[in-house]
Length: 317
Image 1 (cartoon, rainbow, N blue to C red):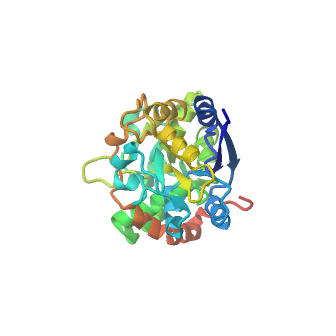
Image 2: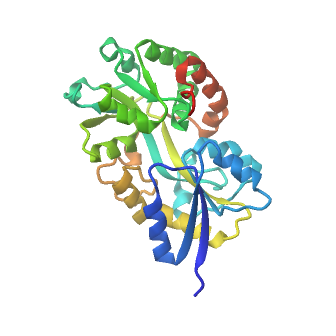
Image 3: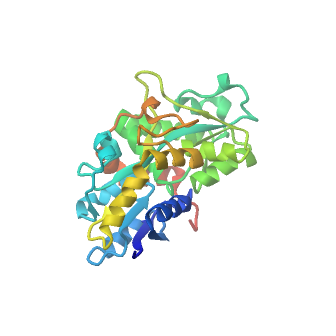
């Protein structure tokens, strides 16, 4: 039997999905070829190749970035059964991209500095308090989650609230780093008390033996909620191996694979049949109630304002 082929462009480079690709290969006799591309460049690469696509599937780390180019017709709609039950924010309106792992924003706590959970913050606004001066941290605009989180806050509470809160955090000594990975690693190394990261960062860092905890912010009734981004998969329009591409989407969204992602990387499953283990189920997270289309609309202006307010990536990034 001739071996099938699947070509993947991946704008998701951390955590590495190689175990998932290898498992798919061995279960389906499909050779998977993966090209890692910087996440801010991957959609442009697809656009350049749209008349003669090389990739069959896109896997990347931002709903907003993919939604922003959806109208250009780069993706082929595909709606496996589990995705038909997704909430609107977890998929494109036409199912041309689908979320496969939710990434809620939480506060990762340095338990050496804040050993008592009663002292942990409960809201984002609490991070502007004097007791956290110079001890909070967050990634720059290198991370789409930073941009998307502040776009969601703008959409939910308005510009005055969003930018005033950010300015208060900066005035309180907020430290910035070039990535979520650098932010989490600096938490213990540099003596920060709190890092605003994706929940999966907490699970990975904890499993490495670091003394960290996780605080869920703004979860009270009527509260702001937490921003939840997601990593996405999409079949490329005109893909040479479209059946293999659809099979991979089915595999990625299956309960078994979703359970594996939660177990390996602390990622929040989008398939409700998955076993979440120590990961908080998506149904138990109060998400900032904003339409993805609005977050996408605000993306560029949010990035520009963040850069003006000290969140531009370090030189050389």
